Length: 618
Image 1 (cartoon, rainbow, N blue to C red):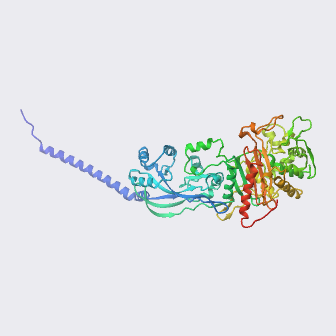
Image 2 (image 1 turned 135 degrees about the horizontal axis):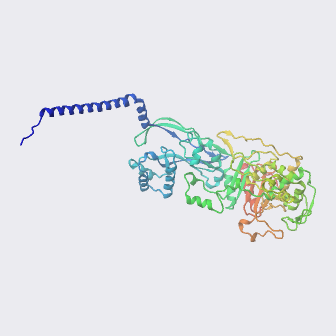
Image 3 (image 1 turned 180 degrees about the horizontal axis):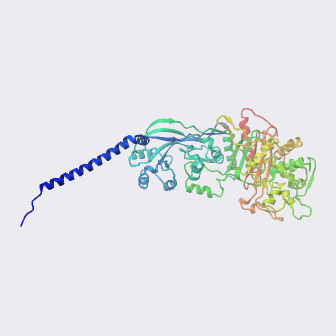
């Protein structure tokens, strides 16, 4: 048997071949690495230097400070308070469920806050922007989060100014509130201007003047660590704060008006006839706007939304009511203007009115009638029969155009965008919307402010203000100054001109007698008056009454009873305030709506004459 011996020469050749091949491979790899290093560090130096700088230095938007809102006396109505919020930047979080669980273990996070956050996280289109998780953090919560920050990448505690409304429910329907920007709003907002803003105005002045209150975004260049936490501010372009707004509104007067309602449902709007400035705008009941700023809970919102008293509904600008007999001074002027009667003509009122060849009976509120009645007495005692007769003589084709001069049927305010215009019916309107002709009975109903006619409290107050100014029209407005600039009316409205200017004073005398005459429908408020009030009561019927029946308050459910209305201005000789009041289901305007008006007028005139006792007579 033979044994094979090792071939040393052959093994040496193989070793050298393998070593050479390995050397070539090492050389090629080193060459590739060197080439890559040259490419990255030489050719791409500018690119990666910029990226590196961007990782270290970032340009962050800075939200502007929202403008403040004041009343006419400098009382702060909307302010900004410092607060700390917990936010999360989605793209910096590796495991969101784990992060949320850790936060829930550290601080008090309710299920509703987590549900809101998860919903926002799914809808958020900018993962590099922080999503709010909790507002108004306590100092103890902030400390816990900061101590555990190394376990919470992407979690931030941000200091910010949060809107607060010190007068709460008193001014909710006027000032409105700011709330979280939703996705629909995000699509229409300027992405640059609102880059750092989380809230915008939702209703009221906050919404109407959003562009002015918001301000302009600023920027700061900051140095950050690997977790994105700011280490140093390198440069800063400060934001431009929003403009401050001063209203015509009187906060103390508003509070007085709300107390006068004593929880009853209704609305009040008071204006300065000389400027059109809105002094008070009440919708009762109201709600606290502060919970809406950071997101109201579903339970709290449901209670407001489902309340039978609908506190979220702004009755003052969107409630539509038949004006009832508050229209009689305006309609009475039309009778004089078109010469269908004069101050001396009397008609007999048996307690009802009937058209020729018509079996329907149009009843007066006073069952046995008022006897012989002229225009002045018809205003003082609110005689329906007189207005049936004169409205029939005048006709709808003259009534509607005359009333439109006072703004009936129009949007009555310059800076309340969602106010409803209400309704001034005409022949054409009925044909278009009802598909029927206009009848004489429609004109009779319109002569009493009933039928198809509807007004909002704002519109009725605005028309009363025009009347108080003897036809001078100033469109109603909330804002007086923007910073230090007076807000001018956006349009020049034509004044109401009548053929005989003396009729203004004669009608004013009749309206003053509504308050001070023993037979006046508002005589209950005449006691201890230091000035002359011109007023007119009204009743708006809700439930129809059959021909052979009478109105029976006790037989009706409370919410089916008549609404009570009252318009007034004072002092008669030089009006400083004009207003309209409605008390839903208040029935007797002289006992419900008129006393509210008296309280408001007393407060306002006393505040104007606090140092000097002025007696205007009456």
